[in-house]
Image (tube, rainbow, N blue to C red; front, side):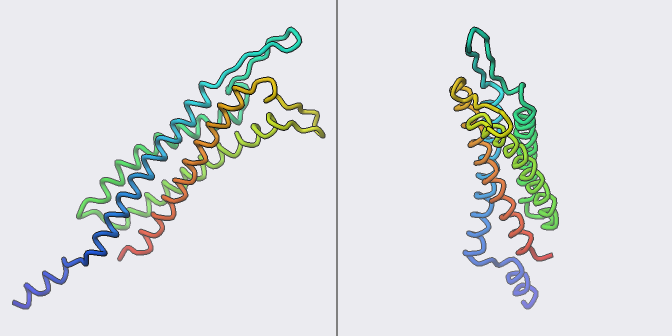
Length: 185
């Protein structure tokens, strides 16, 4: 009889604990899907942004391949998208009943690395976008967004999309750290 009581106590969870666990799983899953969607959108929009205009009889093209920062952003978006797809699989595996809670540390490191990579790619593209939008008088760089406005609008949309993915990754990192803090190891 005493053994039966211990067994019941060991497996008993309050409704709030199971509800919090369910909310944690749903929030992590939704945020990971958002990271995949927004980083993929940022990569596709940047890679397909193109505009050609004629200025004083000279054809001027605007492509993402002309800027190292935009190329880096596309690569960062693509890598984070791919890693996030893998993290969804890992996250599903970690939520099996017999998985080790210590493995959430690796998911935390994955989220943190993805966050840093995506933030650096987005920041570099934002810096070049700022120069394209406003120019830099002291350096002699002129603004080009008044000539290729469609290209600038597309790249702005891509940067905003990537920043949304950065915010989702920041929230994932916080959730993973919370899960590690609350795990009984």
